[in-house]
Structures are given as structure tokens and as C-alpha cells.
Image (cartoon, rainbow, N blue to C red; front, side, top):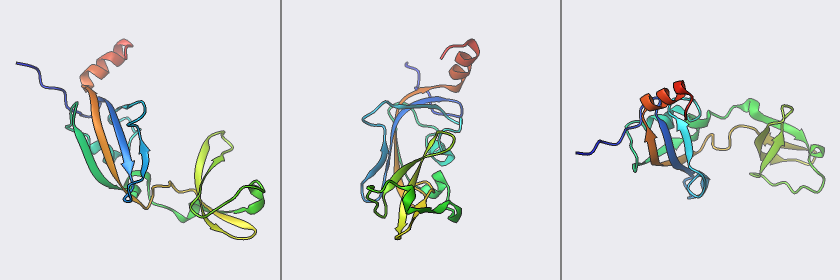
Length: 160
């Protein structure tokens, strides 16, 4: 009799591939051709609604869920729409509505903004998360599950 594979619970270490696919079929994000995503369920690095969709799954399982970007990334707020002077952008930079641009913050981090409106002397940039206000398909393929008890034991002994 073989042991049943561990199920994902709070505190489990999960190794998985996942993707976010927009309604028209565009993949907004995917790890399927990259290194799998590894995290501890409940550590805050993944939105709660996505974590809840993983509870009870085990190695080899695939989960798909239609999700609102507002539930995952928060709702769009008007305060995150900002007008910027056209001269703040390189003169030769071609700008178009819907364009995603990276901006360096004072802290050294980078944030993304979407061009929402272009006027002669100013550009309206949306600093809300690009997937807020959208719906997408979340797909997760579970590659490995380490039970919470083993994760906790490894953490207390200094192993990973």
C-alpha cells in the first residue's frame, strides 16, 4: 500500500507552474517555459483568492479558475491616474494609448504605467495594476507539495 501524496494546506511548500490568460487568449504571465514558482501557502506572496483555489490539490493536479483582476490586484483608483508633462519623456519616444511603460521610482524600484490619453503638452498615465479591471483565467499545474509539518521542521533545523 503506497502513501497518499500530500495535499496543499496552509504552510505547505508548493512548486508549480502557472499562467494568467486574458479573455482574448493573450498570456499576461506564465512560468510554463521558465523556472517553476515556489512559495509557502499563506506567506502573502500570492493573492488569497488564488491560494484558496490551491487548497486540497496534490502533485499532478491542474486547477483553472476565472478571476477578476480587481480581486487579485485591487480595484483601480482615480488617484493612480496622473498627468505628466510631455517633456518628461524622451523627445523621440513614440507614445500611443495602451502602451505599457516602466518608470524608475525614487526608491530605485520600477513600476509600470499605462498611457491612457495623449494631449499636446501632457500624457495621462495609469499607475493602477495593468490587470485591475480585467478578468483572466488562472491556471496552475502542481509539480510538488511539501507538507507544512516538514516545511516547519526544516525551518527550525535550518534546512530548506
